[in-house]
Amino acid sequence: MASFYNVFSLRVRGMTNLVKFLRKFNAFAYRSTGTDAAVAQAETVGRDTRDGKDGRKSLPTLLVERQEQAEKSVLISCQSKANEKKFLKYLSRHGDIKKYFFYETYGMYAVVEFASQDSVASLLDTAAVPSVSHESMVPFKSRLLSLRNPSLVDLSNQQSGLQCQPQTTIPINELIQRLSKDESVDRQITSLTEFYQLTEENIRLRFLVCSLLKDIAAAYFPECTIKPFGSSVNGFGKLGCDLDMFLDLDSISGWNVKMPKSGLFLEYQMKRANSERAVTQSILSVIGECMDHFGPGCVGVQKILNARCPLVRFSHQPSGFQCDLTANNRVAMKSTELLYMYGELDPRVRSLVFTVRCWARTHGVTSSIPGAWITNFSLTVMVLFFLQKRSPPIIPTLDHLQDLAGPTDKCIIEGNNCTFVSDFSKVQIPSNKETLEQLLCEFFEFYATFPFSRMSINIRKGKEQNKPEVAPLHIQNPFETSLNISKNVNTTQLDHFIALCQESSWLFNHRETVTLRGVGGDNTATPWGLATLLLPSQVAGIKRHKKRRREPASERIKGLLESLKNKNQGKKS
Image (cartoon, rainbow, N blue to C red):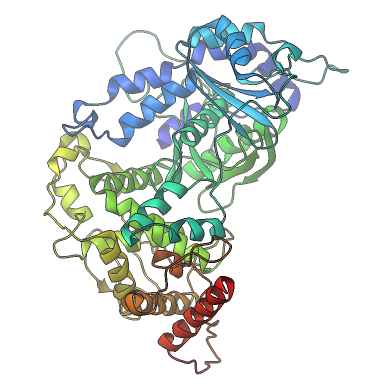
């Protein structure tokens, strides 16, 4: 990868040259790049990464399919009172529409996927460029369009005729009420997962945003791709989560092939660079500059190039996503693929992760603000480790997945062994019949008594190991094994997590004797089961240098439930 960056590193000197370049590029960019990269990538996907015997798809296969959908899609800003049938009839003049949906952020938008990419090109050919008062404006053509047509508005309907898909999770109070009406804890956990996980429409929108940004990057690197990674594709993302992306240059045709003795060779000019990191910074700097000046919908662009992993951070206003764009981040993509595989091996994995994450965010264990909190990634690895420790284990260790890998699965990135099997049919797991309710209760019990002061969490081995360094919480990075993914966590936050686990464990063990179920006078269900765990905690803030004696967890919980009982009885009377 480093040699490729050195060959194709591009520095654009002066905004004038960049403007001229973009004007020339706009005439052919979309038609020439198209889905060439996605098609080429699909052709190289090995047989062992295609659909398994049970119908499950590997992440690389799924990514190619999603990218092809995105390349045939457009994002259209439309009028809120538009008539849906008229809207579709207007667009169908350019070709058959395969999929569409509406959503609302800073306005009403529609995502429309055509059956053919020629339909997208036809639509773009008819799109007019708004007139501007000066020549310095660059009409960068993209698949982000705005449709204003009075004939499409249904004046007889005072309300919007468009049914919008949700893009954010429901409020926690509403979630508690809905869960309180379920008949079992297992059903509550399943319901929470359904409420929180990314919808089909939201996933399509994320891939479309990546595709729109790829059109910008392709001005410098034709055939490149921009792929989502992390929560957007690993199966553990919730509605409203950030969109993490990375610029992938490995899919460019002609790269990494055996050099012929004769024939055509690409001309290039070698640019000086001190390191691969410096080249990555240069690439992101140029693309970030282009996004800032010419990227439709990209606002608040920040080039954070001195971070451990250089990135460009911005908001994509039409979609409402907070975005991070990186380059040369292949280890993160393998981590994404690993989490995706674990989630596909057993449906209880994702349900338990969603539940623990929701519980953690509700009680301030995790946060969207950088700091000493436990991250979602660390919390997910803790859940995976717990499931590996069950008897029999629910998911295998990473070492076992590595042992099952075939020759085509071999992957070494920057000296790190990122190899693991990609064929689901090769993974045989002993039957474990534990319910979600049992697993959640045991999770709290497991970490309420875990020896954090001495031991490290390691999903590669599936067992505790002595800490290699002094840190309150040590979780070994699955691939970059010398790194601690929870290095940011301090003693206060770890103690807070342990205290909450102890409280939740007690609450689960005594739920049959203290939980009151019913409906209050205002038709609100009394919280019970999982819903009770999402109520405000009675765990006081724990300070490192000033410890205060607190009453036992059982007394605090009893007091909380007694107050709920009195409140409920007051409503009935």
